[in-house]
Amino acid sequence: MPSRQLHLGAFMRPASIHTAAWRYPGAWSDANFNYAHLKRFAQTLERGKFDGFFMADHLAVLNMPIQALKRSATVTSFDPFILLPALAAVTEHIGLIATASTTYNEPFHIARKFASLDHLSNGRAAWNVVTSGNPHEAMNFGLEEHAEHATRYRRAREFIDVVTGLWDSWADDAFIRDQETGTFFDPEKLHVLNHEGEFFKVRGPLNVARPIQGWPVIVQAGASEAGRQLAAETAEMIFGAGGPIADCRSFYADVKGRMTRLGRNPDHLKVLPGAFVVVGDSVAEAREKRARLDSLVHYDSAIASLSIALGHDASGFDPDGPLPPIPETNASKSGRERVLEIARREGLTVRQLAQRVGGYPGLAFVGTPQTIADQMEEWLFTAACDGFNIMFPYLPGGLDDFVDKVIPELQRRKLFRTEYEGRTLRENLGLPWPKNQFFEPEKQMRSSG
Image (tube, rainbow, N blue to C red; front, side, top):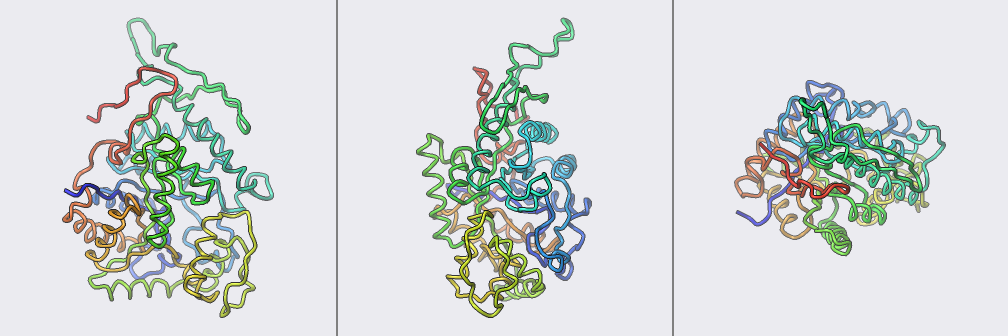
């Protein structure tokens, strides 16, 4: 067996990331808001032995002109904390990963929700930590604009400390439930946090028992300097931005190197760049599928997506000219730089760049199961990643193609599991159980029976 195997997440958002996915022939156009469809997707992913179902989330409608917004299938979606518990009830192994903002939530809310999800799913919860990028989110919470980028990341760092402190409110064996004496829990195994910091003052304790996994898995996606440092300090999984393999090798080495300098084991972080995968019986067929999909992206939508990515209104740019200089903004820095790099590297016009961004501009594997497996194998064994966060071009067909054709090829090469390693997401990812900060000695593993 190879010394390394891939980890695979599924970026579902909760359906596809591609703007035109809902228009593709045979696609379920209502998938983003149809529980029966989403249940079927989660169960198909579990049949394929995926590590996790990842649900992106935003606390605002996408900030784009109405002529573009009217073409978006993601204009509405379920609250992750409603959908994922429902999916937990109809699955047994797949991880359930939800995005929750540290800018527009309070730590106690988030600690309680993820602890509850971890118990309801028997240890399959993960928290994707974001600082929010959509400026309209600020407007939904009484503000005119986001806090400054560095401030958002300082808040996020303290937010994580508070949440993990709350998860450790109770020792694993605090609840003795002694019916004879009438003692439900041991008061010596309850910790009151009493946190006071720059952004938060939180007494605690959490009114949910310590999660099944100790802590739900911490996931991060930022690629800026502040994002990389936050990931190195706190994350156990990174959903990285896919790009040229050399850039991803550099990112992988940088974040893992930061972990080593901080005294963290770099194996305790799984780096999964996003990969848009289109499967065909031939490379030509796969490319034809991708071209057809991209052709369904309307220019109104394309230019709006470009504006979001740049953090700057692009609607007045000459569509057939080069991208003009773009000023610095308070939007996502890493996403903006990726788009600027694509324009520089390929010499794209504004129209060409908009069409690329309006569909999906990142890393794509477009080919047969064999060529896709070849590429994934190269990435895994040249220190570019620990696996991928798979994005499907349309649903259900693109998902079915991957599970029914690519997964067997990866398994044939012994690059991917044939059975889940354990019951919890931590076990399947090969991550350690976190020690309780306040109680020693602490049980480091729970029974997986």
